[in-house]
Structure formats: structure tokens, C-alpha cells
Amino acid sequence: MKKIIAALVPMLLFISVYAQSVECYPTHWFTGMQWNKVQLILRSTDPAFSQSAVEVQYPGVSLKARHTVANGKYLILDLLISPQARAGEVLIQTRLNNIRTIHRWQLKPRRAGRGTAFAQGVNASDLIYLVMPDRFSNGDTGNDAFENLQDKQSDRTDVLLRHGGDLKGIQNHIPYLKDLGMTTLWMTPVIENNMPLNKEAAGWMSGYHGYWFTNQYRVDPRLGGNEAYQQLSDALHAQGMKLIQDAVYNHIGSQHWIAVDPPAADWINQWNTYTGSNHRDEAIFATNSSSKDRKQMLDGWFVPHLPDVNQRNPYVANYLIQHAIWSTEEFGVDGWRVDTYKYCDEPFLNRINEALTREYPKLTIFGEAWTNTVTGSAYFTQNNIQAGFKHNATGVTDFPLNGAIMASLNQAFGWTEGVNQLYMTLAQDILYKDAGNNCIFLDNHDMNRFYSMAGERMDKYKQGIGLLLTLRGIPQLYYGTEVLMKNYKNPSDAMVRLDFPGGFPGDPVNKFEASGRTAQEQEAFTYVQKLALYRKQSPALTRGKTMQYLPADGLYVYFRYTQDQTVMCVLNTTDKSREVNLSDYTERTSQFTHARNVLTQEKTGQQFTVAPQTMLILELVK
Image 1 (cartoon, rainbow, N blue to C red):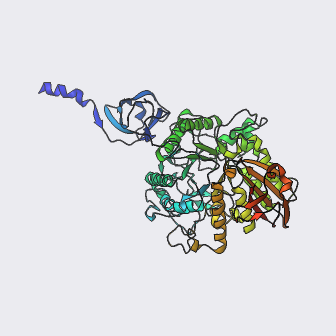
Image 2 (cartoon, rainbow, N blue to C red):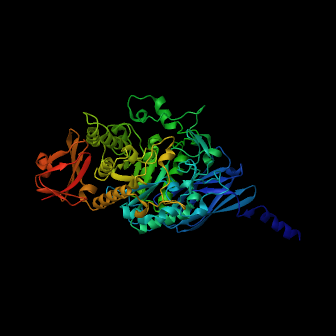
Image 3 (cartoon, rainbow, N blue to C red):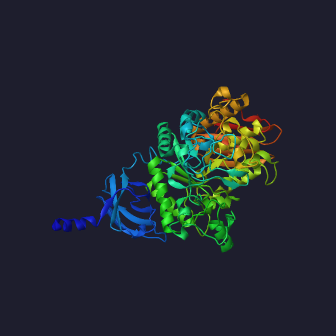
């Protein structure tokens, strides 16, 4: 008996368990990736967890290093995944106080069709539809609210609260998007926002918009979770459409685990007292700006409940980079729109973009660089500027062009006003490496609705849509613009994020159907639809060059052209009819005898009349 007991003693020194409250980030990885040195963050509830010994048991996966941080609940592992490693369950063993714990971590096979079925990128032949999921359509009323989340409310009577829209609702309306002429879906973020209500200027509001991240590896359950996102992606790609994901690298929600239980103090940009960003991009690129202003711009917080993430910390940077790669592979993303781009650490931005495009060469990345000037806009993408830092993003959201379009519609003609501002803005395309990679738009979820900015005038509405779909760049249409949804950001942004009529149970009208639209709404819808269809098959509008002529007394003429096609765009911003003669533009018109209106098919001769406040889009004919 003594011998038996003696033999059992060494066996009792280690107790193996398979259950422990440990979270792993990334939650899993993939075989055959370029990014094969994975930083795995293990987060425990045990403050002594960092003292654990670690072993990794799986063919083709080796532990290269283990790192500890100030917070003892964390272990950070560097795993090297060989090209020969196969998909399966990687066993990661931690040993602490004679207790061995087995953590099961999945290595999954790569998604098929990289560059063809997903990660295709978007370009000027695409037309992007921007949706705020909570406000578009409720396809599953069972996920509107959850008791285990901090914000438990869903109330459509309050514009500041969640309304119940979800990914299933969007999926249900893919035929609507296709019929309208959209090729690509961009949604505001779908990532978990497990945040309480927060006080902003308009009152206590929820994170219905999606920009208050609390866990990058979870899609918000109120939108349907990871499974619903995967289903939506698959459904889009099955219909030949593309998916853009909205990223936020600059900040996180105050209830994110990095903020609530930080691995170390330097994972967040800390100040002695709350310091907000000055929001001035000039402080970053100007050669004569102060380091004080630059630091406040980059490290200042966006708002008090959104801690500013320190991307200079290598662990933080790797966490964000790996999530972007993981999301692209996991959900089949085709492109990225990066929120608050100009607020992020510049070397980090280039590093994450390089990692994504190395893995997915066709992937498109455009940053939300909300700048005051074309110089500022061009600085944050590939450009022709002699600057101390060179950005590598594919493109930006083109705010200067948006401002110029609005000026051309609403300002009286002047030396630098009205449509001359549009001419001057496009003249500065020389600053971009390729301005055709910019995302262009009339409005979005942070701006006054376009139809309101056009004075609720159908003539100006059509001019704006005409410019959007004929100018260089990748056009984006904000949900509801096609049915004349309107409003100003008064008293809050929520007023330009109202529910799409017909997307929710009990809606009295359904504007997804022609029968639910007024005559004017149907006119707007048809105008967008017809022009989108023409644009889709027009080589001049989707890949052609631009030539513009100096505006004359409010009349603006520009051409989009290839060797095989020339489209002439004539914008009359005055209240008088104007005569146009093709002979005045011989550099582009000399080979042609007449023109054809691309929407009405009406033919014009060498000379024609343009009605007041009208845009004509004409294909030239030999």
C-alpha cells in the first residue's frame, strides 16, 4: 500500500482542468496566412495568471515567446504557424500552482476565393450604399434587446435609443439594393457595443450607430451576431455584390476590456485631466505646427466615453492589425472604410494597411479624413505632396469635393464661389496620386441630409445626383437619399439617421415598394436607378479621364472620356436657359456630330439649350 501511495504522489502534483475563465484574442486563426506570427492575448480572472508556465501542443504551431504586462491577469504569446500546419484544435497548456489548464484554440482553413469571391476591392465601377443597420430594417424582432447587456432598451419613439434594425433586415432587402443599381454595401460598424447610455449634447443616447466598440471579435447580438454577419456577407457575394467593413482604430468604448481592465497603463493615451482632441488635421502635416498641437490632435480623446487607443504600443498595434486581417478572412470583407483616420498614429496606419494588402492585394482601404482643404485630404492618402510622412491608404472620403458640390448647388456664381469652387477643387486633383480612388458622396450619417441641403428642390437634387454619378471617384449613396429622406442635424445627428419607412413592423408606408412612394419620391428613385444603370455600363464614367472647362457665368462643362466613349456633362446653375454649342469644346467634341441624352435618349444637334437649374448628361455620337 505504501508503494502505491508513493507512486500516486507525483501524479497528484498536477491537476489538469479544461474549464477556466480565459478569453483568447484573436479567438482563432487560419492556415496558410502571410501573417503567420500571431500575437495571442490570454485574459484571465486570476491576478497571478501571468506567472503561468505555457506549452503549446500542435504540429506546425510553436511558441516563440511569452510576454507579461503590468496587469497579472494577462499573458501574451507569440505563436509561429508554419505553412504546413493543418486546420484543427491547438491545445495551449498553462500551469500555475500545480494546476494545468488546457485552452482549446482553433486553427481554421482559409476562405476560398481570395481576390475573386471576397477581398475584391472596390473601384470607380462600383456604387456604394451606406446603411446604419439599426435604422434600416428589422428582420428579427427577437434580437431587439437583451437583459444581459448594459443597454437593455429598444424604443423607436426615441431617436436617441436603439430601434431594432439588424443584419437580417438588410439581407432581406438585397433585391432592393440590386434593383436600385448598388454594387457594394457599407454599414456603420457591426461590432459589439455593450455600453450603457451616455450623456451627449442632445441627451442620454445609446450606441445604436455602432462606434462604441467593446469587443472587436463579437458582432453585436442586437444585429444578429457573428452568424448573421456571415450570412449577410454570403448573400451579398452570391448576388455579385461587395461588402465594406467600417473600422475604428482611434478609440474604443469605455466598457471595452482594454479600458475596464487595462493590461498596462500605456494601452490608452492618458492625460492628467480629460483632454479632448483639437480636431485640427493641419497640426499633423504642417511643417510649422507645434508639437503640442500635434500631440493633442492625435492623443486627445474624441469624447469622454471613448478612450483614445495608443497605437504606438506594439501589443495594441498587433491586436488591431490582427483583428482587421481576421475580419477580412472570417467574414469575406472586400474593403475597409476607416473611421477617424486622421486621429490615428501615422506609422501604425501604414503598417496596418501594408499588412492587409500583403494578405489581400486587391483590398481597398479608404480613410475618413474629414479635412478642411484638398491638401489635407490628399495628405492622408497616396499623394504627390512633398511631405515629411507619406501615407499609403488607397483613398479617402472626399470631404473637400463634397463641400464643392454643395457650393455649386447653393452659392451664387463668383470668382471662387458657386460652381467655380467645384472647378477649383477638381483642379487640385494633382495633389492625389489617383483621385479616382476617393470615395465621393453627397451626405452621410454625420451630415445634414442632401435633400434638405438642396432646399428640397427636385432640380437641385437631380443636379447633385448627376454630379455624384459622373464625377471621378467611387460614389456612395446614403440610405434613403433615393426616396428623398431629409433632415438637418438638429438637435442631434439622430435626426439624419431616422428609420427607413417600411423597414420595421407596423410602418404605415413601405418605401421599399413603388406603391409606397409618392410621385416625387418615385421620380427621385427612378432618376438614381436609371443613371446608376447607365453608369455601370459606361467605360467613360467608370474608368475614363476628366477634362473640365472654366465655368462661364454659372455654366459648367466637363467631359469623361476613354478612347471608345465620351460623355459630356453640362451643369447650368443659373435661373436662365443657356445655349451650348459643341464647337466651343472642340478639344473633346471635334470628332462628333451630335449628342444623345443618356436618360431620355433624346438627340441634340451641334447646338442645344440647357434649361435653368438643370444638368444634362450626354453621350457624344460620331
